Structure formats: structure tokens, C-alpha cells
Image (cartoon, rainbow over all chains, first blue to last red):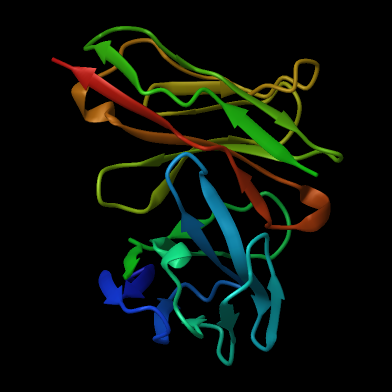
Length: 114
Length: 113
């Protein structure tokens, strides 16, 4: 049981490049989400999904796209990278989409945009 | 909207000292409250949680009590260890809106031997 996995661990992009951050979970969790972590700001929700085929925007969705074609995978796409997207990105999942369920976090992807 | 405020630190303590990290929240509904811990280079892990007023969450010697009257969820530990050095995040989840967590900014704790 690998839990929540993320790839890559580190990435450097140039302004304007695109890329996909991968996230997968093997716990058959209903809910998945993406956060970015910036110094002094805690974690901010980018996008989330309450099940396969269903996604919605969080607090800071601009510049990011997501899709959820399977229960296991929830990739985050940066369409045209900007220096403001330099951050640490965490994927998380939980068993159900409602109620006080624990969120399980991946190890994170550290992204630098030059 | 919902929000979480916590002391930002950094907090530096000697081993075996008493720890308190303050957390207060603003929510329109009846949220569940959480403390998460992040060790260097890792993702967040759930430390403890409380789902209703007066509930006490506890784990690994840490405790926090859900105080609705003061909208607080302060984290305490009676005797910290060097291995407790980490960043601690207070968070809430609005039960009416499912899993959309709101996190505080995090408090960095350093424990010196």
C-alpha cells in the first residue's frame, strides 16, 4: 500500500513552459485535492475532486487544470508556467468527500519557475 | 469565509519544556478541527482531530480541546523532545461543505537538546 504518490519530486521550468504533476493513490479514496504551500501562507487549495469525472475549483485555481478520469489518478497541469507558480505542491486524498475524514498527503513536488 | 489563525513562530524550546501553540478559527458552520504535522522534507501527517465542541484530540503526547465558546483549538504537549521539531498546522473542515480544509499558516517548532 503506497498511499499517495507524487512525481516528480523536483522540477525546474522556464516561464511559458507547460508540465503535468502526477498524483496517484491506491486506497480507493473518493476525494482528491491539490494544494500549494508558500512561506507564511499555509496550504491553499487549488482544485479538488469528489469522484471520477467530477472536479471543482478551490481558492487559487488560475493557471492550473485538472482532470479525474479514474479513481486513482488526479494530475495537475500547468498550462503556461509563471514565476508566481514557484511553490511546493501537495496532493491529498481522503476516503469520503464529506465529513471529518483524515486527509492523506503525498510527499510533495518542489517546483521552480525561472 | 472560514479562516484559521495560529501563532507563526518560530518557536524554540529546550527538551522537556511545555509546549503551547495557539489556534483560533472563524467558521460559519460547525467545523471539525485538526492539527497536522510536517517533518522536514515530508508531506503533512494528521496529528489529532476533534469533531465537536468539548472533544479532546490526543496523540503522541499532544492534546488539543475543541473550545466553541472561544473558537480555539490550542495544541499542547507537556514535555517536548528533539524529535518533535517540525512545522505544525491547525486546520478546519466545514462539515457542510465536505472536505474543503482551511489551513493556518503553520508554526515552526525547534526543540534544542
